[in-house]
Image 1 (cartoon, rainbow, N blue to C red):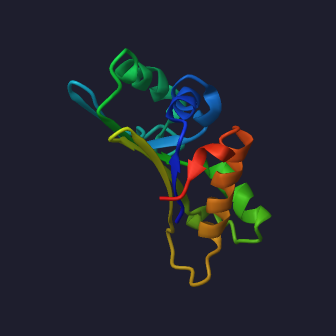
Image 2 (cartoon, rainbow, N blue to C red):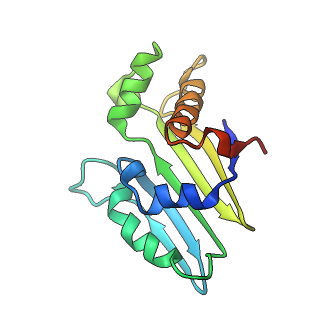
Length: 157
């Protein structure tokens, strides 16, 4: 599991709420605390292919909740890497990518007390004693941040 702070909150927030950078991710759940609290349950409907809704669908509403002169008191998001990209990442790392046992790769984003923290997590559907998914996912998140120009904007907790 990776845990990092983002020093440039404004830059990361712009990418998260205004740019399509994270639009392929799925939203498992979210919470925004402003002058009131808004919770999102990202569970998809029965006719959807993915178990959760895409961040792209929620992003405009989430932005409406946080925009303005007063920053939110806090927010948290549990985003899930898309299954197609998860499968490709595992295959690239030499890990089994069985569709029925594909792990969920989480990117948890938490803003509180004027600090923005990202943590990674992996939820395996079946026990694998030597799963390399955690290390692969941690490296992928670091690589994504570097590609977004945020490599210098991170620090360890």
